[in-house]
Image (tube, one colour):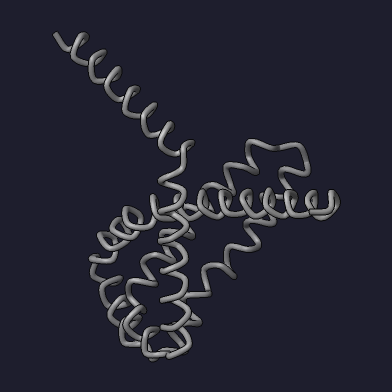
Length: 174
């Protein structure tokens, strides 16, 4: 193989691996937060006024349900731009905090809305097809990451830390 071609191949491979890991970390964050945040909003949704609103959301037809699912992303965009402005003004901690809070709130809202609108969305053939593709791709990516050496080492370290923490707690609880 020609050296320039080999260098290009190596560079593309490095970019691909980096993007895969970046996407995997983002997906893992979403997975970590998706269910607990969605359950928290479900508990809040049991309040009388919100229960009515959730029933209305579940009754939406497919395209209004899809529009509603996109709404939090659109509404959070100005907040994320504010965070970037804060960071640009050297208020890095404040800007980062705004981004983290916006991400948590956005994930919670989208998770709950998706749970409420998923039956309607799955009646859209294009949505069901893309959702199936996304789920397959996401599962394969996460499986690849979870079998990687860095992931396995990180899990081992986490288990060791947990064991040490438990031993320390038991020592101090006596």
